[in-house]
Image: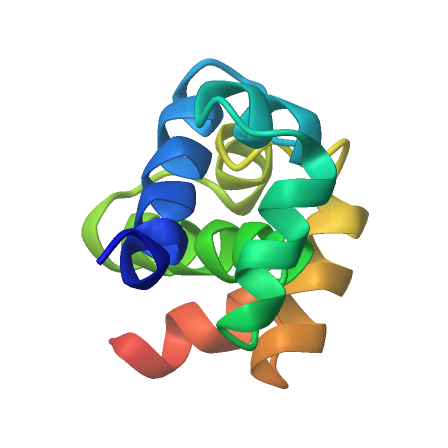
Length: 108
C-alpha cells in the first residue's frame, strides 16, 4: 500500500535531490507532493523520520562511493551535500561508529 512505500519513495527523492545538490526535508516533501507535516507524520507511522532517512541515505551513498570509486573523502563529502569534510566525518562517524577513512580502509 501507499503507507508501506512512503519511506522507499522518500529515499528515492533524497538520492535524486543529492544528485542536484539539494538535500532537505522541504525538498523531499515537495517532490512527493506532501507538506512537511504530512511527510513527517506518515514516516513516523513507519517508525522513522525524514531526518533519519536523509542521514541514512547520505551514509549509504558515501559508503558506496568509498567502496566503488577512488573519489577523495572531500569529494564524497561534497557529493553527499555536506558543507565540509568535518561535517561529513561527524555525521558518518555518528551513524557508523568509525571515521570515513577507517571505514574505507576496512573495505580493502
